[in-house]
Length: 141
Image (cartoon, rainbow, N blue to C red; front, top):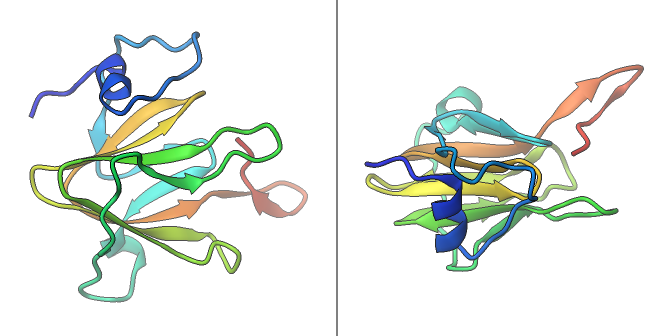
């Protein structure tokens, strides 16, 4: 599978990023990644269930996994192929949902300030990140 440029991913999904990002860079397709205040972890590392898969197809216009608030930007999950995402109750913890990417499919997480990152076949838990300074708090984008 050819690794696309940021420009190609954005064009296919009708999204934009800030002008300072080089749109000719290739978008990595990984099995573990961070983007601002979101982290995507292979499910086998964090879920107790032996067989856990998301069931809801990601629609053509994508799914916001974290909505931009207070001037922030949305982390948008988009699909190329059979990609599914089931949201979690984000008010009760760090988990945002479960992502399942079928063989021959790619999920992209797009953010205006960070560009895009791709996730290959597998099941993942999508979470908010937290940090510890004087106290434990959510990472701010």
